[in-house]
Amino acid sequence: MTSSLELRGFDLTAAASPRGGRFRLHTLEGWLSVNRVRDRQKRMQQAGSWASTGFADAVKITASGTADYADPAACALERRELVALAGDAEYPLTVTDAAGLWTRFVEVDTFSAEVVNERRLRWTLTVTANDPTVYGLEAFGSAGLGSVAGTGRTWPRTWPRDWGVDPDATPSQVVVLNEGSTSYFPRVQIDGPVTNPVITLPETGDRIAFIGTVAAGQFLDVDCARRRVVLASRSNPLAGISVRNRVSFIGQWLAIPVGGATVQWTADDANPAASLSVWSYEGAWL
Image: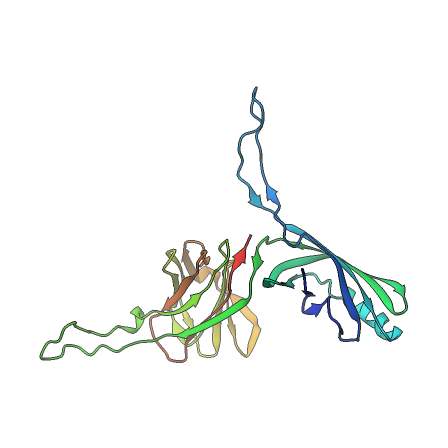
């Protein structure tokens, strides 16, 4: 049973909305569904079709409900604010049920708020999740670039020998979870100062390398799902520039496998101010 439904942070099941409305969810269809796209080939002069390979398609989700208000003016104002939630971009649609909190990223197709009377409205929402994956709770981790200076030989000789580790060979790491049933892409940022950073996923062999310097006050934003890499300033993050041409990669852009993985990074230097940040999820399901 669904206990809450939120679009862009607006709770469509709230006992008291920002303008005092009492929202009730009546229907939610398509949330837990999988649509498979298949290309079945008929068997010539035989019964049936050949087995096909299916791929998960976009998911259509519809929801409807009502909202009641003590103040007619509040009802009229929030009706307009509800319709304004139907923006042009992809937005999180979050459901909370007995198993926890789950998120899909959706485009709003229609959002209507019809007047029943001056204190009640009836709303209907239709969205499409182009990405059919359902995500669990968000997670975050960060790590600096650790280094241990080499100490050379010590006499008398001791065993085991410890020569120390060069900065460019010292991986720091963030443990990333995936308790779900399918892989997913994290989002990664590197804050400078750092030169030629390399991010790896040892479990799969994935590797992303940036050639260049991320200066102090700058950060490198790696959107693994869209394969976009932007260099920007913390003081003006919206004015970043694409540096995809300075990036090389191996594998699937750090796709986190089922069971989780470890995101590691190295660089040609190990400034204590440099850091790696990873935004991920506790799991992803199809």
